[in-house]
Length: 219
Image (cartoon, rainbow, N blue to C red; front, side, top):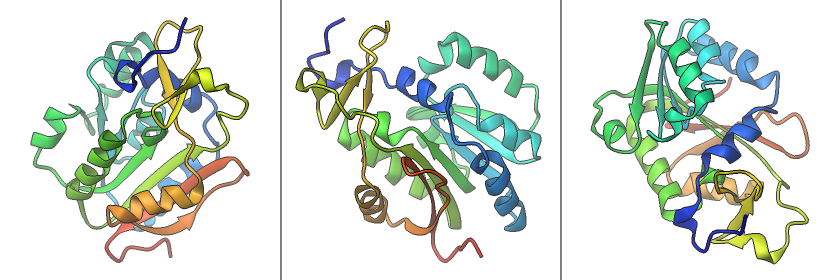
C-alpha cells in the first residue's frame, strides 16, 4: 500500500489501537484511580476512547465516564464489542466527536487523553481538541496525557506526511504518528493553559503526564 498524498486521507484509529495494546501497566488504572478517588473526582471524559481499554477500569472503580470518539471508530469490531460491555454500566455515556461533544453542556472533573494527539495528522485539529477540553473541564480539573516517544525511528522519507509519518503500510486503514518530545508536549499543553503537575512515566520512551487546569495538584 502506498502512502496517502495528504493528511486528511489518514485514519488515526489503527495507530491508537496498536499502541493501546501495549499501554503502560501500573499507571492505568492503579495510580490514577487512587489519585482521582483521593481528590474527589467523580466525572471523567475519556477523549478518543477507542476500544475502551481505559474507560472500563474507571467504570469498574465507580466513576462516571463519558467516552468520546469519532463515529467511524465505534463501528470497528473491537470498539463496538467493548461499547456493548460499557453500556451495561449505568455510569457510562458516550458522545460523538465533534458535534455531540461540543453541544453537550456537562463539565467534567478530569480527562483522559491517551494516544490521541500524536495520532491526529492535522495540527489544527489537535489544537481544537485541547481548546474544547479546556472548556469542558471544571476549574481545578485534571488531564492525564499518555504517549510514547521514538516510535518513528528508522522510517524513510517516503513515509513522511504532514509533520509525522504514515504508519503500518500493510494494514487496510491508513494511519499516522507524530513523535512529540517532552518539551514539545509541555509547550502544546501550556499554549492551551494546562499546567504540568507531575510525570508518571516509568520507562524512557513513555510519556505519561498529569496536567491541571487551575490550582489542582497531585499532592
